[in-house]
Image 1 (tube, rainbow, N blue to C red):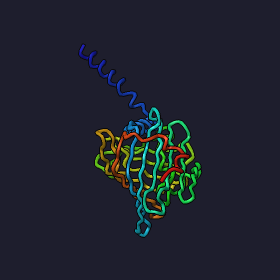
Image 2 (image 1 turned 60 degrees about the horizontal axis):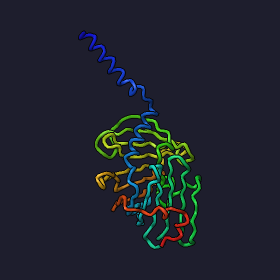
Image 3 (image 1 turned 90 degrees about the vertical axis):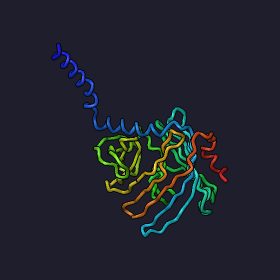
Image 4 (image 1 turned 30 degrees about the vertical axis):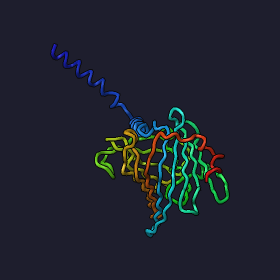
Length: 264
């Protein structure tokens, strides 16, 4: 009876672990990416202040300040965001409106106050630099999990945090200026730590380092710093985030192309 009981336990253990053993690199990559994305939703709406610092290859800098508001779509199916520059005067009230969806086409519009024009950013135009920074327009979209394929590569020490990270290669299912994005996701807290971007020729174009996460409302972790380095030009851009506020009742009617002309 003892041997029979041990044999049954062993068989049960094998049956229990077999689904994990059968998980493919694609399934594992998707699962981890989905878990990471799910930690960032459920906030309803968010407001934040930001500072954009542009560094030239020689080290000179220029600074811009902005505010950003985001509202989640129904059932957490993507979000709408509005980023408005406050300073300096030559860029004041320039605004980027972004509609990101989980199962529909994303859209972006740029408002240019000097000519009071709203310009839709085409899919091919999303590879362009956002207001001269190292962030492309497509980098400002929600990176919705289902818009990519995800392939788990390996586990290794996190580049900019203690502990281990899962390294996952993701590729856009839609038009993109990147052939590949390589993502480091922290196994401890599911937060994204680093993203490497590869251009269409396969060259390592840029690296985004995300750091100084802080917890807000006992629920939402958000970074205080994002650093995008362009390895081909030597330029980089820092985004510094502060004064996050959640569930404050952002007005959804502000997030339309027609409303952009009312920015003052």
